[in-house]
Amino acid sequence: MRPRHLRAGAALLCLAATTALVSCGGPGDTTDGRTTVDYWLWDDLQLPAYQECATAFEKAHPDIAVKITQTAWNQYWQNLTTELVSGEAPDVWTNQATYYPQFAAGKQLLDLQAYVERDKVDLSAYQPGLADTWVKDGKRYGLPKDWDTMAIVYNTDMLEKQGVDAAELNDLTWNPADGGTLEQVIAKATVDSKGRNGLDPAFDKNHVKVYGFLPEWADGAQGQNGWGNFAAANGFEYLDKKTRGTHYEFDDPRLAETISWFRHLIEKGYAPRLDQQSSVARTELLIAGKGAMSLAGSFTVSTFTGPKVKQHFGFAAMPTGPAGRKSAINGLSDSIWAGTHHKEEAWMWVKYLASADCQDRVAAHGVVFPALKSSTEKALAAHEAHGDDVRAFTDAVGTRGVTFQLPVTEHGTEISPLVQDAIQSAILGRDEPADALRSANDKVNGLFG
Image 1 (cartoon, rainbow, N blue to C red):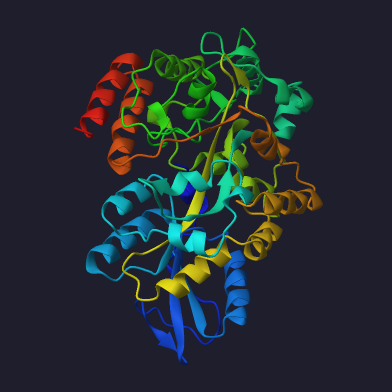
Image 2 (image 1 turned 90 degrees about the vertical axis):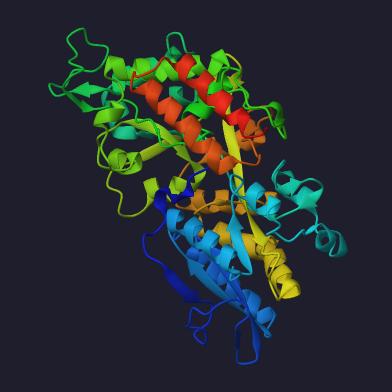
């Protein structure tokens, strides 16, 4: 699933929704006679929006206090696992589909279906498919929080300098054989130390100043930020029964073809070698002018449009492949710990987080697209008010057949390194893509017995 850690803050912050709450005590604390609901999230850029929601919630429910704790992605899951083992978990936490099946299997999540039915929560109000992501074995383990899709992010000045018309970027084609018109644009956008682009016969692939495309290789078993979208456009599907299957198909030749194309980009000098890749995140490399194009999730829009960004970036639709235009759609939820001593208060907070009042507040901050359809429109308006065209992300949701769900199964945290290591081995040239993926697929499916 999406690594929203790409822009999360590094420090642990224990924050109160009101000035009366300044400690970082365990679950079940009370302050001034109020019940405290502990809420965890990892995204520092979303923190102000949810503090605003907490303030509004507390005003409407003066007997409940919300204490928000924000940590960076990796530490977030480490801390949560430790807390769950010790029986000191937060009442509510932001959940992610790679992780939640194992929490559900361990009976750590509260089934929300009875609450949804009792309070008549309209699940059809959310973007299609988001609510269903959190249903497993007939139980509902979260309410939709937000959603994201993928698009091409590009440096407008760099592409214009190479004669690429921004308008044509929304109509690019791709295939694993020759890369289609996308590869032609990537070649044009690649520039060596003497200013020659990748289509120039004299182009020096050993001395590249600006790479045309920056891939993401720390992308788990879903490839949401890169290869997964191209593989889907090539007809690849992760599971034999979509997202509810238990037999993975990473040995599909169409995935191997996709990985081979990425290796081809590196061999041509259009993308950096993995073994020589900078430890700096590709988003930062793009902003620093070391690359011209990459893929971006809608959750990173503010990374490229913020006031401190000196370069100008645009967003274009994913290219159309042999199986059509494809973009992964993903979403987060808010889940309740099964061991909470305050189930009703925690549910009230989760229901509010999924409501229009909170999601409209989140929309106004323009950091993510909220799960509610109505709030999505408000987020789009907020971006447009700032002069940012982000329709490449919203059009993907609004166009039939473009988005695809990422797999949701148990063993997600075990599957991720197996597939990622295989793909990295293929990209490094240590193994042929088909061989590496076949071996990984056998190991993945072996996890299910």
